[in-house]
Image (cartoon, rainbow, N blue to C red; front, side):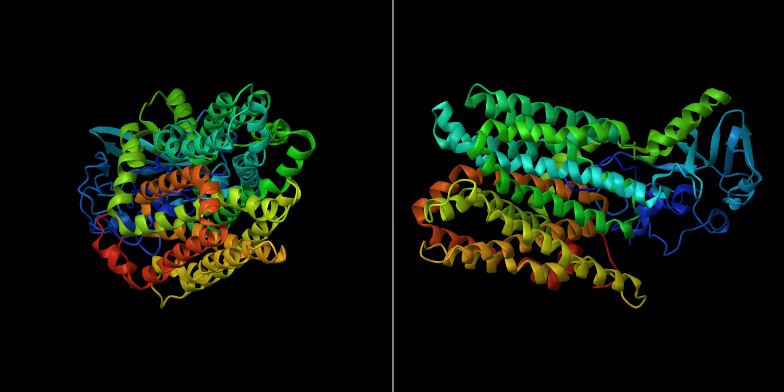
Length: 605
């Protein structure tokens, strides 16, 4: 599976002095908690939320300017979002509360009492906070969730959030399985169509290239239309394509449908990072993201375990058919039970209702006026992504590391059959069982990663420690060295007379290390670049999926011509060099960040 794992491109710019930023359990507060300081000193996030009362008495400039606050960029990449908070005669922000209908209650008086008087309206309206701002010379009343609002995704029941996360993980699993299950049927498919096996490998190429390029163009559009409509429509199209794959009359049809399968598959995962942003505050986002990474890798490496048996028993077409059928229950669940997770959508509906009920067109949700335009988001997801990949050493180094890992995954789709089918004479189904070792290694990597999260949480809880991105790398320094260790074991156990268990054991540390590479790449990049991390991770995704796309085209020739032992040794040597990256970044990462125009500034190391 090859999707986009970064945060949202459509998040409004940070408004540290806004009413939303002062409320607990808000998306703005969640974002601000993860910021330390901007590179251009446009703001420094407070260690505790500022109250409206504190803001009203503080010695501040008359205007609170909005900023893409983690950057000392010249502003060429972002439009002007400067806004003025409207104040009364006493210099206090014009804030208030509004409620109506069945939600009117005496209990509302005690909720956010520091936000001004309550206004009642003649429609059902949960208690909502209001803030008057002037934006682009026009006055607006911006709506914000009140503390404890049950419609705020941050306040949803934890089990409800877990059910949503589970649906996303299952969708990711099925997309991951579809990525590589196809490889098990390539030989029989090409034999039926009378073409060479290399043409069958183009199905893997087109799938991965769609995942490489599509997010850079489609991510902004997916952000604008809402979460549910994208998940439901993309997974529906993804599932329907299996009908065409199962009934395809020729190899060209297969290659074209695999391109579309990759397109709709990656669209289904573009928004996962943003969806977690919608529901989980920053300090609780680590576990669901770790599980998402685990499922993505687990699905990709696990498909050949069963796909070879299907091909051997009932043919390659049923590999596609069974996967399409398996998608149906989840597809129904997404259409029926998956909610819209963007809190801004709920606030937009409230604003529409208030405009209609009061005749006051000033009521808006924050997203209505502050969301970047499509042009800006396209620039961030494509032009800026490529520029950061080329000019930022941190982005390039981790991008190269994760791209190598993804190349190894797709190389082994060809390597494992060479090791166990050609050299040991196993049949197609049994030759897929060594992939169980990769699946176990992925699981062990996910389990061990909890030690990294525990250490990081302790560092965050220690007031004497200034947490910096390099603290994300303890797990990477431990876990990533297992990737070259596994590659060395596998390369030295390629000989047919060596027991099958030896190369099988070597596969587990490979997957163990790959999981840590994925986790460290995304967490470290996100911490380094803050809001610019969307572009940084998109650039890394382009590099990763492009290399994953081309490797199946030469994998078999590489291992046959060079020799399995020496080809594996070459990979192990490359892996050894790249495994030095977390150690180098741990020691020198702060110096690289200090030279960057886009990286966040931290007070410590």
